[in-house]
Length: 134
Image (cartoon, rainbow, N blue to C red; front, side):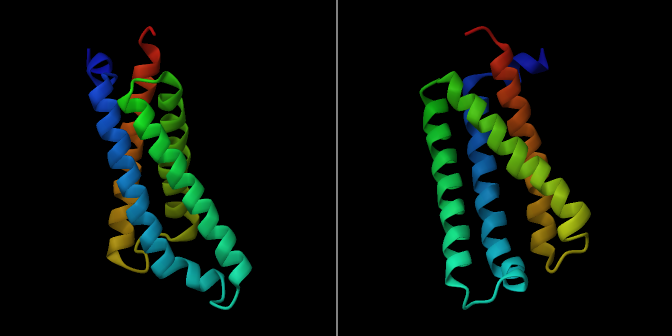
């Protein structure tokens, strides 16, 4: 019964939107606290490429949210991939290798664990929606 309620269109839309917002928070915190250690401020090419990737990912996520609002199944698949890869797997990779707890700032820990929880919920809601007949 819980899988059916998780897979309702409004739940998928809400969890996907929340996952996107958590991704934005994590991105802003990464740009503030993490990327400075990996790339010098004068490296414009790397900065431009990284920014371009973030813009494309955000655009893909926004298109998925609009598609879910219109009840398009392909958008649910995109949301499943985005939440699963960027928030769940990315959060686990961050926890175990990049920024082990305690991180540079408590905000990073909150954003990372929040991303894990919201990302897992969004991925489960998308998965439950995809299990429903078309």
